[in-house]
Length: 230
Length: 364
Image 1 (cartoon, rainbow over the protein chains, first blue to last red):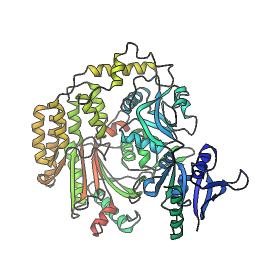
Image 2 (image 1 turned 45 degrees about the horizontal axis):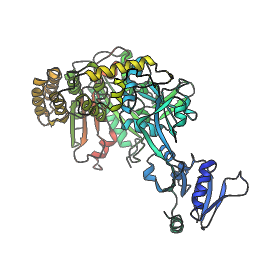
Image 3 (image 1 turned 45 degrees about the vertical axis):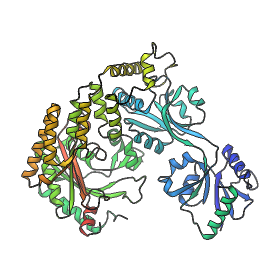
Image 4 (image 1 turned 90 degrees about the vertical axis):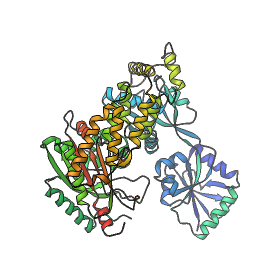
């Protein structure tokens, strides 16, 4: 009766996750060689380690195939419909911080707020005959945010990478993307709307509501929580 | 769980409703379940993606499982319909649910649509036909009229740009309110706009122009902002009249008399108010108890987005948590958009047979 803990399988997010658990007396380690995606947790019994892409962890948590998982809070909100009913945040880990923001060209000196974006979208559609395009990979979060704020006459276009470049390439007029310092946005001639913060994301430890939680699982979780001080 | 749309009782109820609508002269029409996504996206905007299932065909591109029948029926009518024309349809509609797993993702709809004819008579015919089809179910009707609010906005003593912005957001109450507050100077001009309008060269820090939206378009908007800053604020009296219309919540005859009082100060709504009177007369002639008919000034502003005139719904009297059993309204503007220049007066409504069955069997 082991608890399955999913953590990001590579990069800084993996290293920082290992550090965070390490600082609390738990050693996470990859099995054998670097290519393997299973691992061990030392310092507590009954916890199994699974190394997955951070983008897949939300889905695995929602399906209950992981009991616990570390991933970005933005990814959970984007990928799990009704996430707050299906998952619970156990701890915000204090790293992997990034903001999901709406950004427009710096040359749009008339645009500072969502209110401006909405007015520009109306004029743009009249003038060009199509809706102002916002490039993003965060479709749900962006759409809900714009609906909440009453922005109309836009369309979302999918962009899975190098989103900052789409305006220059004329495949979109604005973007909704993750940024940590805003440096890449500025370098690409973009600026963030003053009320354009959709979500402040960070690496977070989630608990699945769908996974099997037997007495033994719960006891292990309690021991784990005590060890982690959460 | 809601009973599935395949339930025999719901099918039988749908057939009963279809036969009833056909008996009053409606022609039965059929539409494809898969609809081209571009038309729906262009009409409803990105929000439709949250409510409709999108799929893709390798040759036809993005398709949607029909979220309702209105668009295909209007398109069919615009291609070959007469005036007046009555249609009925029955079948599944599909709705994505992003938040509430208890809401059905597919359910039956039976509709009755009337194109052309005298507007007041047509409104009354659709309402009375649907009310008749649902008699004995202990339903409470709701009515409203988006056309009165639109007429009030068009009659404001302000610029066309401001009227246009308010009309565009009639169906988004929160933004409508924010615009009204700004136009009546209840909220001040933001600091960013003050700085922008005061700048000798607004493009001094702009950097190079990138993207499709040209510098000329930005300059145009700055001119618009400048004109807007010079526009006299809406008077307290005018915004108070808009608020009075939005807050109306009374029986239809009482609303009519309140609106007549408002029309003294706001003559722009006179015609729309006469339209309401003619509709009430027509409803009364069809046996609707108009004296007890509720009317709400804000009804239909959040859920029934493309309606631009008469709006109505029928809700179970003691179960406000259930979805409405029937909804409908007038959508002249939608036919203008779909008709590419041509337009036709249109009013219609849909019934949900599953809910009728649930209520009739006392399971509601």
